[in-house]
Length: 606
Ligand SMILES: *[C@@H]1O[C@H](CO)[C@@H](O)[C@H](O)[C@H]1NC(C)=O
Ligand SMILES: *[C@@H]1O[C@H](CO)[C@@H](O)[C@H](O)[C@H]1NC(C)=O
Ligand SMILES: *[C@@H]1O[C@H](CO)[C@@H](O)[C@H](O)[C@H]1NC(C)=O
Ligand SMILES: [Zn+2]
Image (cartoon, rainbow, N blue to C red; front, side, top):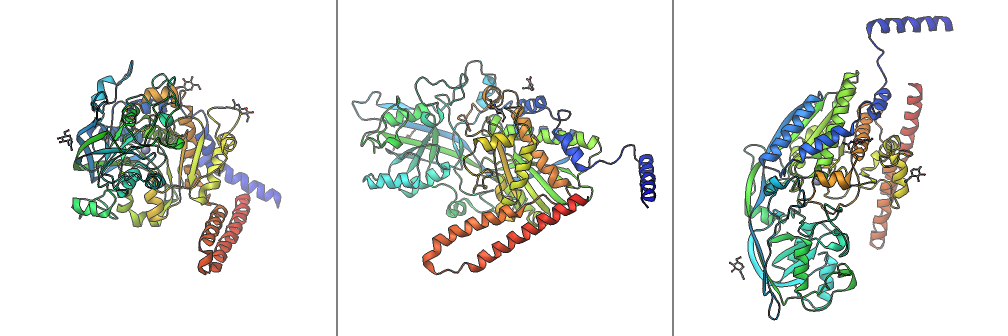
């Protein structure tokens, strides 16, 4: 019997050897190849980044259309069938700005007119294109001129305005100065508006972005924000084109008017401007009133912060252009061989406020690196079981516009076919791996990190350094706005993850987020780019190729259990019966355990 079986096996083997030049290989063969030095390449990630960051490329500008062509041709060259999907959306650009500080005598000078200009640095290779950097502004800011006494509101949080109120300081009719760093800048403007402010200036404090002292050096000597550096950014509270909330901005579609957009409450109703730490300190020095509390102060050897109001007065003007602009998402597809109607999506945005080396160039370079490696696997005979879709989004910086419109445009298709969406925004700003996901992807993330070498220490895996550095839960949950995963998770309920290396980089959204900063401080060997591409691509490969989807719902059940307990604590006095909820969670947990066992048995048999 055994003999018969063996000879039958040999016969099959012989025919397959004759009919195939090489035996078809298991997915795991290609997954190991994907991680090997034979296909991964730090020099190509560096080259892509250098090309993508050669000049500023804000959404809706010709420079960003050029960047789209580069992404399209690189994907195509890697045998990924690609096309551009355009939408016409409302974006805003600065036309004129002015900021004048007036101080009563004996102050000298009595008037300061801020230049609102970021300076080029010594040996700046981008000096010749510096004039293409947009004037510093806030996306979707309200246009207008306002003037009034200045009040300092710390980080502009609700509790900061409550603190001012408790001290009897009325913000009404005044201009608020707040510093960046603890909450979303759009919420700073909204909180100031709700407290009665007529305008807002937000500055980059040296304490948080400047290296924290007079002796500190800044870019290009060190990684810190230079004195004239300004963090640009949107102040929009919504997601997607503000004129088409909930539906896609397709040709000829219905749009809200400017008044309707303002009534919707997601765009600010008072003007605001971002300023540098040098300008912020000049304004802070001009304030009188009570000395601010210790946790409202800046660096020890910097100026003493007082809360005002006044006696100095700020006159702030911002005029922006509202424009229906064309944005371009680049979409690339590798069709699945067995389940073509099941999609694994990898997404990253392309538009940047300035040169965008970290945000988002590092992510785009990693996306292209993944595509190139997939191209090499295809040449070796790999075909994904399910369809893989690359998404290179536009206008993320303005408020997740490109991804939101695309999801709105393809909602039914995605609800039926999307297996998972894997996002990378700023892929690399330093060492240390971070990840967030919907819980059924936790285990996959962990396993991928175990298979990839730590780019900063060859004797351990990314997983080892990740665990070593983390005091909080290993895999975090996806935040509210954040990045392009939002529409997938919140509108369609697609499982999603977001990964990156490094935390908060000081030159964020300034003119100094360029290739030189990345080469000197973010990723000198470009090995971190390679590592992010490895984890990103490996997760995609496993989701695309494994017969049984690598989801683990045990983690989902325990996350639900945790949330239900929090809910229970909140409603304990209100006689709400949560028995059925807890029972459903237990049922899910049991089902997840059973599925995990079944999968193990089936995988062993294979
Ligand atoms: C503010 O400055 C603008 C010019 O920059 C001027 O036209 C306007 O009168 C000033 N407003 C106040 C209230 O000082
Ligand atoms: C590199 O990893 C090894 C093994 O985990 C560890 O013992 C060593 O301290 C690490 N080296 C550095 C510089 O972190
Ligand atoms: C790629 O890594 C090697 C070392 O592994 C390094 O010598 C080389 O400079 C790196 N390339 C780039 C572009 O950083
Ligand atoms: Zn970004």
